[in-house]
Image 1 (tube, rainbow, N blue to C red):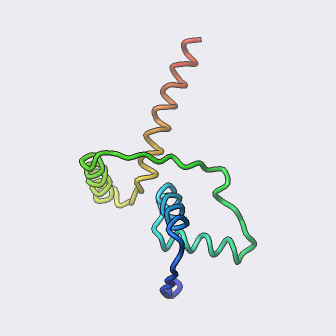
Image 2: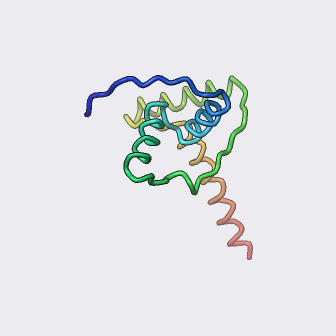
Amino acid sequence: MEATRNLCAQIPISLHDKVREERESLGQSLSEYVTQILKEHFEGGKTTMTATKTLAFQIPEELDLRIKNYLAAEKERTGKKISQREFIVGLIEQALDSYEAADTTAE
């Protein structure tokens, strides 16, 4: 793995909020997100996020804790880390697949 170095910068709060929201929707750490943005900039401006939309909502703290406990248990059980984003998107896809399968058979 390549050696790393810290990068700090003061940015406007409005921009910080956008960064945080998009980073969370992608399920990335801040380091992963900033690295991705900088690589895209220096390696030809490849855009990988154009086909995505942000889905943001608030949940009760108790539900957040249950999700975190589940994800930690799954990591312990399988050895694979699943991000909150992957988990939620997976649940949405399962529900939509079930709906679409039922809708197709009803025709």
